[in-house]
Amino acid sequence: MRLNKYIAASGICSRRKADELIQSGVVSVNGKKVVELGFSVNEKDKVFVKNELIRPKKFEYYRFYKPTGYITTSDDEKDRKIIYDLLPPAMHNLKPVGRLDRDSSGLIILTNDGDLINELTHPSIKVPKVYVVSVEGKVSLHHLEKMAQGIEIEKGKNAYADTLILESTNKKTILQVTLYQGLNRQIRKMFENLGFEVTSLKRIQHATITLEGLKKGQFKPIKPLQVKELRNFLSKLEQKK
Image (tube, rainbow, N blue to C red; front, side, top):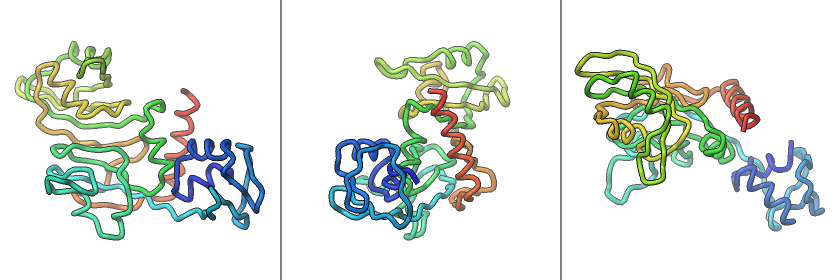
């Protein structure tokens, strides 16, 4: 295993941060300082960071279907309902990958793998997230073009989205929206800018992980093969940067 991956697997930092630690000279293997980024280690090696012995920990990966009415945090000063109210204590050490606002529902990936969280949320990688969105009124192709070209939702912040109309009447439009950014309440603000009110918003996919087979409030482990497929997908996205 590459040394930076070994360090990240201990949970103390991401792989990118591990590279910085190695280059700064605070990492040693079996008593010898290592500054080579491509250095490899095995299970028998003793790795120290800042003179402290580290060990890879077991990573956990879950899919969770967040219902509306809950916020994506581990604590809330306003005493609102949080997602951890729905999860067993053994899962309270897992962190959500990104957020869904209180009025939104759908897929949240939960894990203690900091390296994976960083890859899934880093703005330079542009990981796709797919939503099903209902709005009041009739959305036209002209509106979809505007969303693809970019809408300024805050001063100096342009938001983009790929959209597809699934159902449409004069009173309501249901769309599939794909984001490659992670701006706060991005979809709601984009439609508000166009004069539409979002009535429901559900995330159905994040990268290769989907909501399929989950009921509201339910969670399931992500299988090892699915984790492998996710990592391969992210690796290909990084190569495109």
